[in-house]
Length: 196
Image (cartoon, rainbow, N blue to C red; front, side):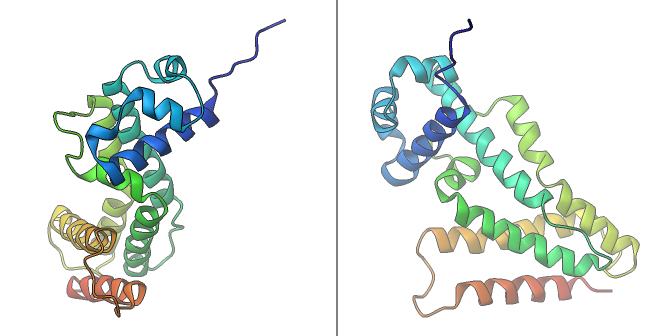
C-alpha cells in the first residue's frame, strides 16, 4: 500500500500564504523557514520538501501571486464591447490585489532584497497581461480606440491601476473616499481618453 502524501497542495498553499503575510507585514527579515513552518503548523522538512530553499520559496511565492492574478484576469468574460471589457479587466486587477494583498508586494516590488525571479516565473508573469493586450488590440481593430501602438495603451492602463491599487494597499488614500467608485470612475475616464 502506498504511503499517504503528507506534503500536499493544501499545505503548499498555506505555506505560501503565510510567507506572503510575513513579507507584507514584517518584511523580508521575518521570513525564516523555521518561523514559517511553525506558523503553518508543520516542520521545516516539509518546507524544504515542497520548495527546496528559501530562494526557491520566494520564487514560488512570486509565481503563485501571478498564477492567482492570471486566473482572475482570464476569468473576465469577453463581450462584444472591448471598451467595457477594458474597464472590467481593470476592476478585476483591483479585485485580485484586494483578495491577495500579501502577494502583491512580492509580485510588484523588491520586497526581498536580492531576489530575482526565475526566467520561467518572469515569462509567466508577463503572460498574465495577455488579456489586456488582447482587449486593447480588439478595441483598436474595431475602431473604438485610437490607432496607436497597443503597448502604449497597455502600459498606461497598467500604470493607472497599479498606482491606484498601491495607494489603496498602502493606506494612502483619504479616509472619506469611496475607493471602489473612484477607482471605476478613473478607469472609465482613462478608457474614454483612448476613444477614437
